[in-house]
Each structure stands twice: as C-alpha cells, then as structure tokens.
Image (cartoon, rainbow, N blue to C red; front, side, top):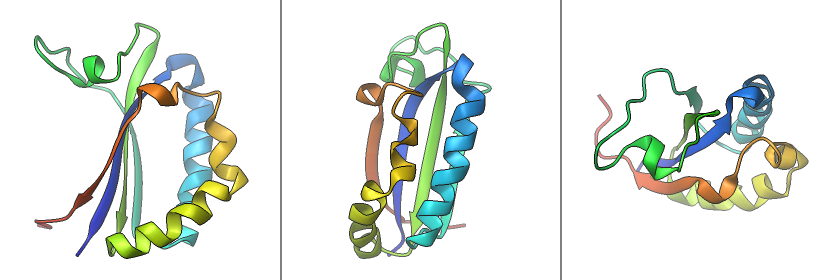
Length: 115
C-alpha cells in the first residue's frame, strides 16, 4: 500500500532561497532511495485560525512562513528501509540552521484514495 511521510514546519522568510536549494538537494537524495514523488511547498494562502491552524500548530512567528512537504513511497517497508540511509547522508544535515526542527510536525500515513 502507498505510504506517505508528511511534515509541517516554519522557515524564516529570510531563509527562503536557502531552503529551496536544500529542498532540491534532498529531493534528489530521496529519489535515489526509492521515493516516488517528493514535494515541498511554501505557504502562500495560509490563514490564521481561531482555534487551530498551521500557524498555531508550528508556533509560527511574524518573520516566518509555513512549509509543508511530503514524500510518496510505494510501501511503508521501502520507506522504513530507506530512512537510515537518508539520515546518514550529509545532504540531510544542510538544513540544520534553516529552521527550528523542534517545532516540526511529522508523521507517516497510509494511502487510502488516489484519484
């Protein structure tokens, strides 16, 4: 069954160009390790919510924007086997100063509809 890793984070607006470069580098890394599709998105229309929102979930400050990314794998087993290799690759550490990973929300999701 198709498997997805999805994350939501914030990135300082000043780091947008650097973040895009990082995303391009890790996209190649993920593809080399079996990802079917790798997508990074930069928030453009992300409204504040009264009770909850992307902004609140990641504690976004005024000088940051919300980013959302996801990776599509053909199965959870392939993703699980790939992650240790991905995390050891130096391209994964190129982001350490671009955003606060402690506020990132991350999870694995099984695909149920692909229309």
